[in-house]
Every structure is written in C-alpha cells, then in structure tokens.
Image (cartoon, rainbow, N blue to C red):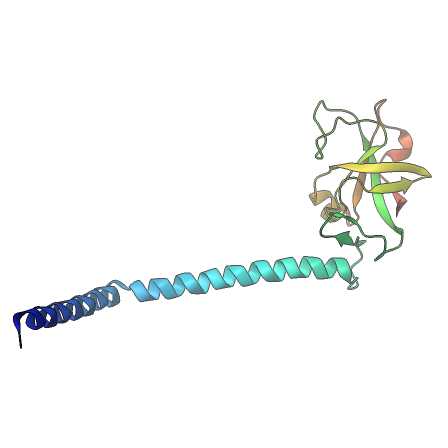
Length: 176
C-alpha cells in the first residue's frame, strides 16, 4: 500500500470514530429524545390547528344543529356567498351605542346606518335589515356578549344617542 492510500484509510477511520463519538454524545445528552419530542409536539400543533380550521369551515357549510345562525363565506372574497345561502333571518339581542371618538373595527368613522356584531362569522360590509331599516356591519362588539346572552348581539350606532326601542331587545335580523 502506498503512502497516499494509507493516509486516506486513516482519515476514513478517524471520520468513522468521530461520527461514533458524536453519536454517543447525542445519545447521552438526550438529543434524539428532544428531537422526537419536538417533532411530536409540532405535529400535534399542526393537527390541532388543522382540525380547528376545518371545524370552522364545516360549521359554516353545514348547520349541525347549533342554535347560532350560520353565514356562508366565500373564502376568496370574504363576502357572503348568496348562491350557497339565500337571505337568512335569525334572532339577536339588539342594543345601541353612541360615538366614543374611536374608529370602527373596519377603520371607518362611526355614522348612522352602521352596526357592530358579536358574531365573527359575519364579515364587514354585510347588509342587515332590522325593523325594516338596512344597516351595514362595520364594527365588532365583545364576543363574550354572545356567550353571556346566548344570542348574537347587534349594536346599532346612533349619532343622536340611544333610542328606547333598542334598549336590549330580541329582534328578528335579516341578512341581505
């Protein structure tokens, strides 16, 4: 064997020993257990998020017996898809509010004809009919109100202040 071949063989043996030593260090330090745990937790998070998203989509496509109204969103335009669902009606708790100096959640200055809703499935720009008047969703109320009162809350903006007709009443809401 020539000198060059011997050097090559020695380097090969050293690399093999280094790999074996590194492998032993990884085993002793619990590296593989940590990697396996990280992969398992990542997979669990991914699956949980996937099921959450799928559940939200299926809730919108199929009414599975829940008492809350469902709207059908076109996911590309974030608008109600009237082909999937004709105008709907549902009962909601209707209240009113006056300007606080803040913009609405959609970024607009509050004015008459705007409403806020606790139902996050209803996108901004959705037109609703309440007592024969048409309103546009431009703001959000606290989502906990829906849980607390077991009905969606619709909050009508009134520049002149609250009308007694909208004190905390259940009313029929029609989505255009």
